[in-house]
Amino acid sequence: MSEDIEHVKCLIIGSGPAGYTAAIYAARADMQPVLYQGLQPGGQLTETTDVDNYPGYPEGINGPQMMIDFQKQAERFDTDVRSGWITEVDFTGPKHKVVIDDGQKTVTADSVIISTGASAKWLGLESEIRLRDMGGGVSACAVCDGFFYKGQEVAIVGGGDTACEEASYLGKLCKKVYMLVRRDEFRASAAMQKRVEEMENIEIMYHHEALEVLGENAVEGVRVINNKTKEERTLNVTGFFVAIGHKPNTDPFKKWLKTDNQGYIIKKPDSAKTDIEGVFVSGDAADKVYRQAVTAAGTGCMAALDAERYLAEKGLH
Ligand code: NAP
Image (cartoon, rainbow, N blue to C red):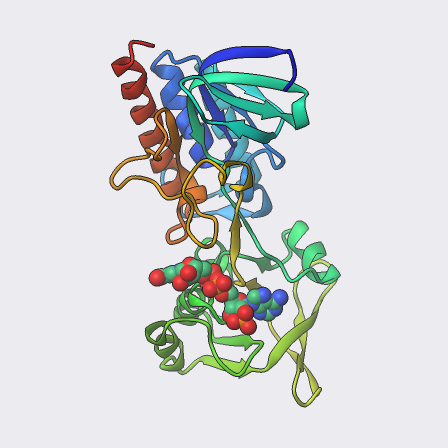
């Protein structure tokens, strides 16, 4: 650990809707929060284009702009927003130690709010990543972006519960949904599978994988292959959704906190508390079910309120 040790009352790790909302509440409660932004300042919303389902923006808002607004609001109340990512923690307590940028700096904190989110998994195709980065019709969130493909034909990759949920969401909006499942069976629960099977405009394509997303600036089709017969064909779609799972960004905390088999932090019911006193969690790092900006923001608020109560009980605030 480095010698440069600073002590803070409230340390927030992560800069998505959960982290910034925690910061707004903590700062307004005079907890003088310090927030480290992590590797992707603004989080997953910086990978999306228009956000139309966050209340308070009647005309919708561009995802990256929304996160700039969140940051400005947190800074308006004097949150100390810093760049840097957390590489190691020591939650022995009562002062919790957090190492930033591989030991460049160490901070101790009376309370820690983990808001490190999760990252969508991608196939890794060059065309997929290129069109995703330019907002050209590649998305990992049907609830966020499905609306833009109303009445159109789209494809979705994946055979888990998320893919089924997203495919049925898209099925209600789109003219046709091609669902690419790489094996001859779903990973999803039988109930979720039945839901997609029963929708007439969803075509389940077993043994199919995407080879290339077509289009220069926007999706114009997807070239797919039947991995059994090796037959290739092109699907004429305008949207390409990837639903092959998420990875919660919780690696540095796993030694200290209980996680489920996928790495999501397990918190105490009806709270943002973890098993360790003074350590709280909010947002997608502990949520594999809802994963929305508004739910992340809500749990960020919960974490700050829980942290404030904790500090007050300990006579630290
Ligand atoms: P998941 O269960 O891990 O399923 C991932 C799916 O994507 C699988 O069908 C997998 O295929 C496929 N896949 C993975 N990599 C791929 C690749 N490179 N190319 C093509 N396909 C690929 O992930 P999830 O659906 O996001 O669910 C995560 C967890 O959340 C699960 O425990 C799930 O039950 C839960 N969840 C629950 C609900 C609910 O209860 N309402 C909703 C959403 C999620 P293989 O099967 O061949 O590996």
